[in-house]
Length: 64
Length: 512
Image (cartoon, rainbow over all chains, first blue to last red; front, side, top):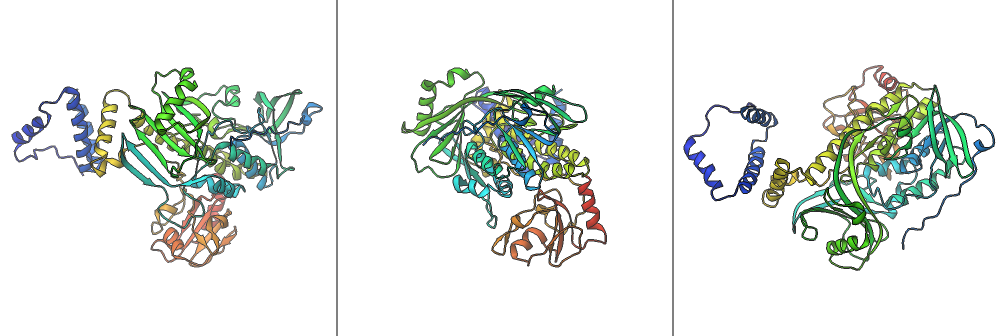
């Protein structure tokens, strides 16, 4: 499997807004903890080591 | 009743009054590993001298969880059943976060094995049984208590200086096996050091005795209410004994934590009562490290002298017994004129085994004692999710319990046969007549199922049963397995071509 890097969200603005809404009212530490839980949930949903590896590389490289 | 430590008798060794002939094998350390190796060699007719600087069995429970594979090895050495009878049989591990149970594992879901998944038994009992067994070979095992090695050198053979209560003497050996534990003096005298990680986390470990109906299972807590922010582990042992491990944090003062006024309230809080006595307390840190190589010319390292892991996973003592299993038959063969390359195979295979143990042990440590920042955040996220979402439970890591590794052998194989019995794996047990397959697998031998075959080693050809079919045939109608003396599968075929078995036997004897 290959990581999807082309647009895949039917309504990108709404999806982004829901992500922000989930963090609303949280402290920085609580937000970081939520993100950690979310990553684990999505990792399990994906379940494909090759896709996850590509995602990890993309995340690391794009932060530089 | 606390354990009755009876000192073993020191006898002045012959080397004090005149030179001894060179010994084929000298073993340093009469702990479980050194004793097991001496017995394994003796059962193959090979003599050894065992030197130990002390004269009693282990003080404190130390290694307590003996895995199924270790019990099979101990059984072959003549003490397995005694360990099972005296110890506490268990297979269930339960993990809690605060007060909630978040993960449960059953280590032996399938029946049809002679030995249970795990037996908890204090190391001093295992050593006591091994000493008694070793004393049953007076012509082959020369056990020398209060014999401390003070110098080692090698030039084609190994030369030792040994200190006794009556003074020093010299000893020579063709092969020296260092089974002298984590602080190996032999390792130090050869100027060898470990590679790997040192974890700073400190743990309090205590043996306590109490009358309780606590079930025979492993219990592990993350952030328990009785020990906030840390971890705790409780195991039941023989004689109403319990072993409790409490994480203290990296900044704990070991001397202060060892004092009764600190220890007693902590344990009281963990148990919820004060109706217990403390037999032994220690504070430890641990390392996940190993020697780069386990064979250095004529000096061989075996057990903790070669590699160290954290205790969470029971991979120290069990890993050491697997070293013995991989070394005993090869060393016996080399002493009797076999190919010395077999010792390279020991080195290669047990480095592989040690790496698997180190990997598991390091991962557990990371989970139990995460570094501040991302490690801590993901650890806490797993624990928070585990109570609600099943997917997170297998991520909870309180120790991955010892299993024998599968050696990466480049050997004949057939993809139609089951994965669990591939070359490099320990042959699984199964009921056999009124007994057990594991007792009949005294390799080198060929196990021929669903037919028989000609081979240059003995052939075992039992009637097929459902369990044998399931574990050894899968969907194939028949199979031929070549099994090593350590019960590892060397090679397997559905229909071996002419000469294939003989070639595989040769490869095994050449250490390939």
